[in-house]
Image: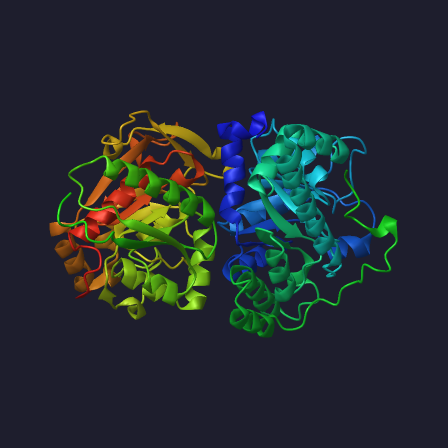
Length: 305
Length: 293
């Protein structure tokens, strides 16, 4: 592991993510939504001003949420509260740390603040989760200090195709790293590290573990219990659900049903009796936007590097 | 060798796998089992080396295979909600012990939790698992939360604060003294709970909770004749929060709880110790005894 990961500080940061495994982290915009999420069994909530589908619709610049709204949500629930900062926006991150959020998501769903650098995360007391589309990106974020990864999907669309593509890419590259270590030892790992642009030691650790060295959730485009279970089957440790709970929900009770159904689907992702029940309980899903016709500039997952 | 070495004893230990740090416990339990078996093979007084089988528990059927159970860290609210929806809460209560306290709110005390055939099997909860095994909890979500019980203690959730106050600290754990290495145990505390009160028939929670009724007071009195809550570990209180030490490890009978996460370290000592307790409990017949409460 990288030097940062052997410290007590990193144990505690990565440890909280380990305690979230098998759970669902839900985007919420109000204390009432946060309570719906908590009652449904969410293992954490992500406090933000607008769910990604509404950010997409509204356009403009998406920024860190107002601290007053984050505070209200912290006061409403006892489960961990996460919040998003813009990529590279070190001051937003410090403000969120000051607020005492439990995790910061340095997120491509917001408008990036720096086109060169992500935040150097290992100097913070609060842990960070970051998105990735491939293994190199994941290990670059971990090298910067991220204690949790999420494979990026296309947030706010309700189309799971990008999330699937990116976890498949990560899995394939982990298999490649294992094969490199087995066949060519450290030199082959170093060569692969140069190719995918990541730290050699972290890649070696990944090859030895046969998985990412931190917890990895799916995020972006997960809209139904079946989507959530699919991401678990593909090897994710848990699921972020952004717009899928509250977008187009007819009533708060319908949102609560969706939330309960997705919690159930993640806990029992390989039990089809439970999944049938979860799908029935979930009811109508958000309408969604197919990713197939999207222009590159409309894609959030492409932000970051 | 003695006459008892006919067949190795099979012991199935489950880890409740509804949410949280499941694999971490299974991995450390497996290491502990290897160490235990190498310890016992060099110990001429031991009778036989048990064979351990570690399983993930998501269903009542899986729970019924277990001789002992670990309830891992995670989010206790999530675990309770998922367990409730699966119909697993009452089987868990039967597995551990009867429970009559429910949550801190009086409104949630309900007669539907009066059961049960008590199996009283060895159970260990870490962090959220300790919360689940407590008789009562404070700082719970609005409306309170459902618990399994088994330890007559009241826990305070998230005592140290948010994730920013999470820490690793050295613990002196006297019960580990028989393990060869006496170095302190590195306690990993993540949004950790502590035991704020040991509930006895005369303590505050019991006296104030009038809804408990005489039956519960009687149960507490009866149990505490034979099984008192033992404090097995403490940690100094955070600065400015009062005198003395926080209680971070407790045992009552064969129910064990820790505020911290041994499964997030490479230190196998507590897992070894606990497996030994499980084996001894089963040998003395205390593990699988069926009784009616």
